Image (tube, rainbow, N blue to C red; front, top):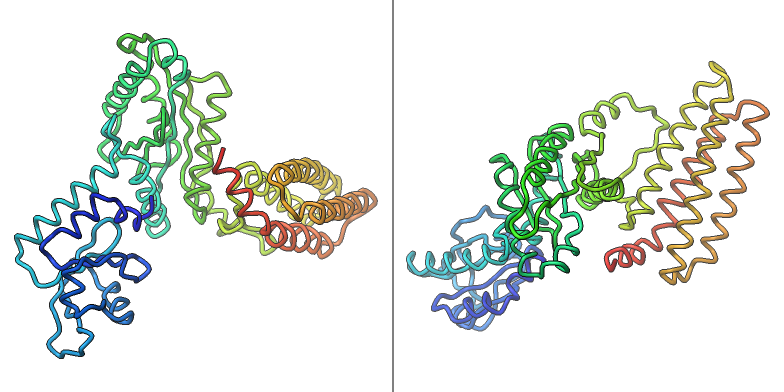
Length: 423
């Protein structure tokens, strides 16, 4: 749910339209999202001019402002600006008690809209806002923050064997046990169904991994009423500088998948840390390629394989820089690993595009064939002697990454992202 859509809720609209106050809602884009009849009447049948709205949105709320009426009255109308639900409310001249009553009613609705009714923890609406805020804070202050994604093992079996009412009780008991093991700085969210997410602030992957293990033990330590033993699987990932919130979530989700696939009732941790990334950035080669969040397609497999391709390309370029200081066989082996990955990735990507009915598949397949042909030629050349660094950088960095992954692949990003969201 976007911030605008919260104000589309019928209860919220009813409160704003029926209140005795003159109220308008400005959305983050600078438009009047909603204005009740009293506001329109006070403004002589119109709304503030766009330049006024842009000026108002730049102010820190709460604040008071003077609105010019369409008639150009120099006196204007005093308006109180309040931040609610991610938008700004404009409330024209009113008693403080009336304003406070309206604010309390909206705050209660917002609280209910961001809380999971069954378990009482924050829901996905609030989680999305919190994750974006943590990403911004981590980038601004360079402070560690980690995600723990977890779900109940064999929850479907619990529902099938004991009924959904008991399943709901298991979810409530799980939340109670998780809350007992969380720190004051941690926050718990229900992602959906039997999946939950924990934001561990000021915590790297090691601390978050230890927290996840304590929670796993707390859940498995004693049987649940009416059900018996229950276990959870957990995936942990620390936020890495420059990545999107979606990539961060996908990494945690991938390690949760590994925990489930590895036998359940376990914790799997991504061992990458923000400090390692920042340290690596300081000593990065001028030829090294850096993954950017804007390169992400939104499809988990494609993005993971693209990121690994960056690693292998950088490894091959690093080996080319070392030649002739060391045996060229290292470069050949690096190119062999890269070629193997490219072949597998292209096959996976083509299968995904075919399933999505990508209209440009035939041309994309031909581009893949050309790049594979060139990769094999470069590898064969490395077996005969040193490959010039310029030739290698031009092929790998320019043709494979910039022209193909960053360029040509962009044509199907929206298509595969939509397909991923439907799964």
